[in-house]
Image (cartoon, rainbow, N blue to C red; front, side):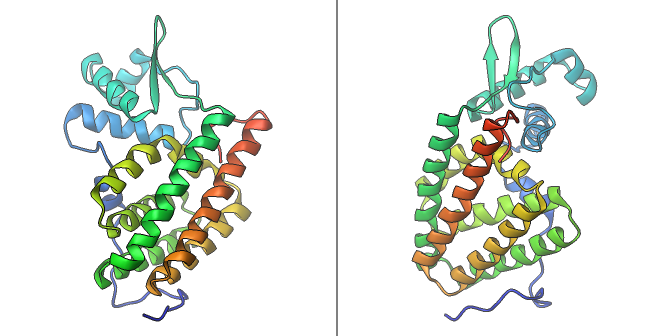
Length: 246
């Protein structure tokens, strides 16, 4: 199949809404603890709660309008995801990643996503490829209006759809479990406009490689994309910034 350059949105292909990205995330069930966990997860990913920050139960109960019981259940969900840790006599705090942990996390994610890319190019249906292209158009629109949260809703769903298009349930499960640990690294790095522009170009190249079913090319673009994220995170850490930036 030949590649179609991503220059303008295709009027025949409706773009998925950002709400779908939220609904697709692991742990987003609409129980009260699940809803609280989703709200806290978003604040951590977007950098409102920085790595190492203590999560004050009283203030969070007031902010979210819940009692301590669902809040503590939400903490347990986030602890299982590797986003929060429970510290004796201090309660919950956002996990801070060291240089070694950042490198190792991106090495693992890079390997998993490269495998997903190759399998997706071989196994994806035409409908799955069309959906990823539509999401890329929506991402382009978010980038053009400088709407970073909307951009990241598209970003997360694109990466997940590529994983789903690989049609390997175990691979997708491993990816989702590890990806939660570096979501905030991906988010903060694109607050730099030049890095954001480059990331957008890389996503366009990814969509074209997938449309061409060129697994080696897509895997190589993905690895370079993630390596740049890792490098940005390590630079921020070295400069004394939060370990969650990159």
